Length: 159
Image (cartoon, rainbow, N blue to C red; front, side):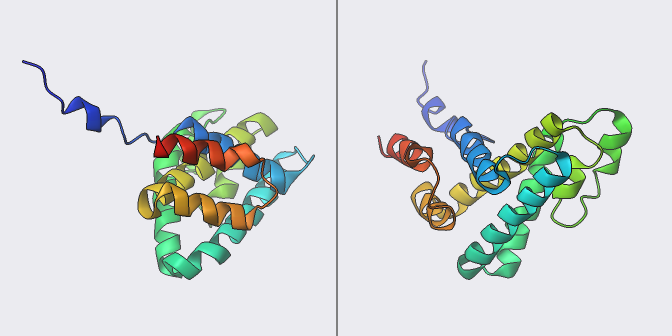
């Protein structure tokens, strides 16, 4: 006996590759050529503030904060750390959780953790308001993103 239930079960992915690529592009847009962990943290904070400013209009400040907190909670197990002590220190995520994601790490780990954090948020945002509307908001915030960053994913979701 075969079941068609499997068709709908795979639609929820924790961080689809397209959201990770979009997160990379957002960070690259904010960081430019800067690659040191402190510079990446500052770029992450700028991206966070831009998202919060724009999306709080739609979600409300409390709604945005709740969505961000949930995204950081979901992203945390995917964060890389150099040792167990660093992982334990990042548990009580300070502020937006971004400095905890990069504190004490080299540039590659810091970049990875920020990508994971933003990809987690973008995934939740798309789940909450829909991919098309989510992409529209992101494109309004970062109009210089590569055209295929959002459009290719939107096309995939309509097929």
